[in-house]
Image (tube, rainbow, N blue to C red; front, top):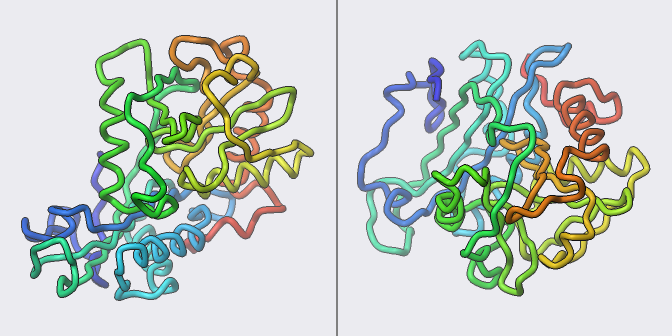
Length: 301
């Protein structure tokens, strides 16, 4: 991680090295925090944060899932994000806003602990590190939707993702993991949504068992713009043999081809034409080159 000069913390811009908290913050002990992953891209009009409004709305929605009230409004958080990028004089970056229960209360019930807020940004290139990845089905299932709020980004939920990600560490046959849901259907990656292509049509797992990502929503719109059919339906592991292409989506992963699952090729085992088309469309959109979706770009100014 390459540090930048400033981090926004509880309404103040502080030097990177001084953005610290007490070791007894509630969020550290119990995972009582909510966060977002956002990206800023260079565009012909200067740096622009991709779908900042939607990410900020989801941050505040996630906060409600753990009975948290943000001390800052959506507009204040959005402006803080832009000002942070301006002060750090950075053209492209990954952005991490987080709200967490702070120091002053121990015990599972967070009432009485102050809510703290930070936003950091730093340069971060390819998350998965490859144009195409090989995936292994995790022995762990995606968290049961009745155990959590499945469409909230609560920090504690991500222990599930950490456990799945650790399964491929040190195994050079795989680059990433894949979750099944409690019914045995394909759900998502540890930090990515998944799409399949069959006969030129897109299939993606439905809401309810996944985190319905903002990149996922963007790709659905871009696919429909190009006349592609997108269907939300369950996909079982035995359906993989009939799929022609597969790809992950996510703010960090962007659009990344999946060429094999559990050692078995998807289609011909190469990046497919639909994946290539949608990756280009997505990169055009985030770089402000898609006239139809200019509203997705929050220009920093």
